[in-house]
Image (cartoon, rainbow, N blue to C red):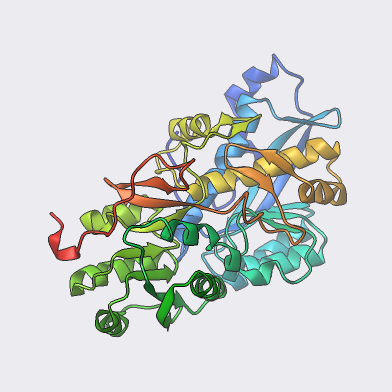
Length: 413
């Protein structure tokens, strides 16, 4: 099966996920008598669509696998099929909140998140007021996890705690970098992550020469790059979203703005970023939340390799960690429901809060505030090498040697 286009899966229900193969499995297993519908919105169009499509493919992969390969899921003695009711929020927070409220009015009890903190923030508030669980892989802003919400869970540590593993990586580099500039955009996630990065850098003895805040939508960064060429920091650190990271790298290369290390929180993980930039994507450093070479076992998929193989057999779109994160959200729901032995929303919420288990994605354990445990669910460090992202830190997970300092733009073949 090829990846669906945006119009084809604006709404994806149970009918699209329970075809001939699941009926064949039904002859060998008890037939499902109930359906659990997972609702929510995801950006299939608009500025966040590139990553939104990956997240949604992850949701589809998990639902397809549970239904067609496992014949549904057994919860409290009843077998259920899973169904998605995901709608395109067009990267618009207001549209997303309206769509979520409509689904609540229709009786949906369990929700998956959109992508980007600007959308997850208002939709999480609605789910919390309704006392309905939301498991999401698209929002890491501290604001999501500092409101006292009990029903909202995220697959990442909050933004201010996401940089800790990267400091450990910088400390291993020879010669050790001494200085950095930090670039962020004016949105909740990027600003908070930048604040965390600055605090962690300074606490570790690195000099933060300057900080730059760009508009949320930016078309030119030449003035920022002029300042960077004057100050000559060892590291340029960008807590920016995909499209802005691509713009910064492209203009750094075009203007000859060199540094020993370019670090971008979002962007290099996407095949489209690497393909667009070609040789200029090489050696960029990126936090990597999932890699198919990780060693975690998984009671449903078997492991990361098996998940990646199943995904590629069913979708044409290149795999990315956002795909794995989306699928892991559904694995969390299934595990919580099976542990609770019921689909009662409060019982499922309590089971989600208590999860502590290995998956193909990572070891899942949420903090009391609902974000991912910063040690267990924090990122490894990857680097673009030969057009792919390879893990270079920590040592026990790395399978590639870091290229450092990165080659100057004008010296790339």
